[in-house]
Image (cartoon, rainbow, N blue to C red; front, side):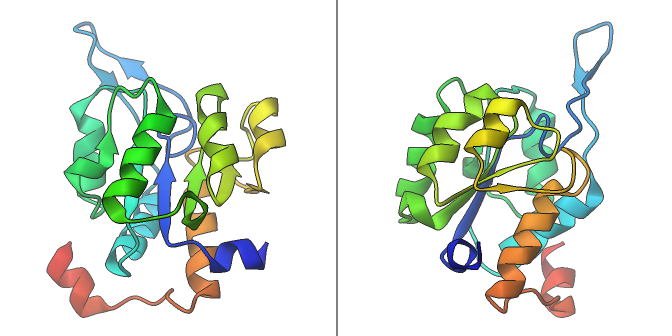
Length: 175
């Protein structure tokens, strides 16, 4: 696994079931609400501060998703909402950042994520992903979706690459 982690230069993730526990609350007007784990968010902040491109590819359409990840340092253009063809969005992300697919770690938990998981450099699944995704994953986090799964793998990659350290001045300036 270390050899795969050493070559990672970017991170891309699904949202529901990976960065959330998969639960969605809806109000009477149809507005959808999600709960995100702050440790996953901080892991994404650490990655963006270290210069890793980070992307979000989700079938969800709520602008609240984009706003959540803007607070983590993810560029607005790197948040793909309403995705129905995750490969197409993944290819766009790689192209815009000059990345080869094998340089990207992708996090997914359900069937629409499998095509990207098998093409990227390292497919990561939360412990509670569906069976087919667990079988397709290169790495299965011991954490469930919405409970530090993303932080787990991002931290492992960055520590292995010697980039896991908090620059308080940069953190203060960016966030």
